[in-house]
Length: 220
Image (cartoon, rainbow, N blue to C red; front, side):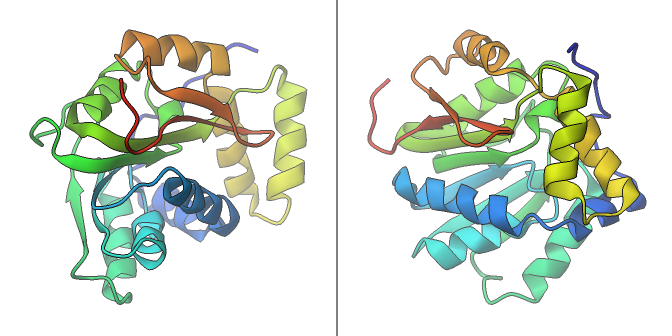
C-alpha cells in the first residue's frame, strides 16, 4: 500500500478535541513502561506532546523526572495545559509551542528524548530525527514510537475494527488515516540511518506499533 499523507499539524479544535477524547491509556502506559525499561531519567523532551498525557505519566512512573513537551498545534497545547493544571506535576512539566524539525534547544541538552505517534504526520521526518539526536546527550535514552503502515487498505480497516470499534466514526477515520500515512519498518530504518540514528534499535512492538530506541548508557 502506498503512503497517503495526513496534515502535518492537527490544529483545529475538532481534531484536538477528537484526539484528546480517544482512549490512549493502554498504549501510553506501555510507552512509559518502555521508557523506564530503557533507563530513561532526568530531563526529558517530549516531541509532539499532543494533549500532554504522556509527560504526566512519566512524572508518575519515573522519580525525579522533569519534562518539556513541545507541539506545533496550539489547540493540542491547550488540552495539555488543562491536564497539567489538574495534575500534581505542574512544577515538573512545561509545555511549549515548537516545530520538531527545528528545535531551539542546545546540543545534548536532554537526558532522554521521546516521541509518540507523530512520525506519520511529517512528510519527510529526517530533520525531526536529526534534531532528536542532536539534543540528546551522549548516553541518553531515546524512544520514538509510531504506527507502521499495513500492507493493504483492507488490513488498515481490520485494525480499526480491532482497536477503535468503540470510538466515534470521526475518530475511527482518524486512526485509519494515520495507519495509511505511517512508514513501514524498512522505510523507518533507512530514514533513521540517514539521520544519524544508526545506533538506534528498530523494534516491532505490536501489530501496529514500531519504535526506534536507545538504552541509557549505550554508546554510539
